Length: 478
Ligand code: NAD
Image (spheres, rainbow, N blue to C red):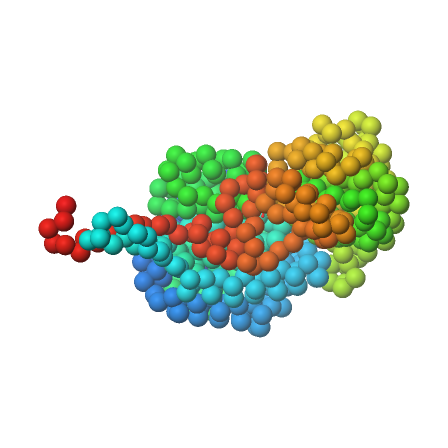
């Protein structure tokens, strides 16, 4: 059984309970993992409070060195182990698993540099005998609650930047992917992080995650997950008047404008939706195409979808594998079936290939009230609608509760920038699909896609607090 990590020490859950982790590829039992609960959270908070004192007292160069060593371990001796765990536990194709590892190295190195950049400030005072300074200080104990879809790189992003700023961590990974998180915490410890500065409490959201969020000893919650979870975590966090950074769901629009090459646009669109079976928050699950290129675009997208290689996960040619579990398959097929029943045309796909793997699916013109158009399907399914002009495309893109990412395919920079200015989302990419990552970029969303931004200096701002310190230069000053 895989045990919890409490302040660097491995121990079973105090209840003695555990849960099973299955491999999505064939639903075989991969491992039994300790099922943490409120008592374990209590222990982790105790450790993290003292971990915070130790870790925040270190010099920036020492924190930088730990994160750089962690990056080296991920890129070196840790790589193969992490790769195997990602494939087995999250059903990642080997190419997606490699991408996560490269991005994790990038994130750790970028965060390491942030340890030296906790810039403060000064500002003028109308009284000449007064000085005003602004210090940037870590928040304290950060609870990191992570999802299953990119269980390594998202956890690395949510952990590395708070650590760089001097915070300690309690990690609550997705119940689907605890092994990746335990492996990542081992690497942080091997890299020299003080043991008390990191705990991993494996368990379920409803017991373990909610106990963590409800604990008064937690100073900040960073969640990447669904919007429903974000609302619960945000509401509870406000009761404690504590910072929370929420990266939630999306329904990203890809605009294909009249001057786009339909073949190239279809190749970009297919990559933007079918990577990791569409289990990507920024997947372009809504495609909005200007009428003049619509027919050629959908013919090319059908060909792209039907050419996708769905082989063994360790086969380099495989583009994606299974969904995470049976419930996800039921949800995605349910969205497709309901859309077709409400009048959408099924261009291709729409059924299981084998096990938990769904064929690449494209729907045309679904009812705009249907779940497949409005809600996250989080599977390999996208919908295409035709519009008459750019303004209409922007209006349709904005008709969503989400606003995480968007993309526009055009060679006309004015049209591209008009779309970028007009679409309400955390990022807009011109000439590429909506799923883009960069360790320095401010990732986050408008509307129900979340609160706050992560990446580079933006994470540093999220995971630090400002303090105004002023000095009187006169002993007698009031
Ligand atoms: P989820 O919301 O089901 O779970 C996320 C994490 O929250 C898990 O660790 C879970 O155990 C925990 N959790 C669940 N209920 C909780 C509660 N009441 N209190 C505390 N913790 C709780 O999400 P998921 O299914 O693991 O991941 C997929 C979702 O994540 C999708 O909606 C996707 O869009 C989103 N996501 C967003 C981004 C982004 O950058 N915005 C990135 C990746 C994934």
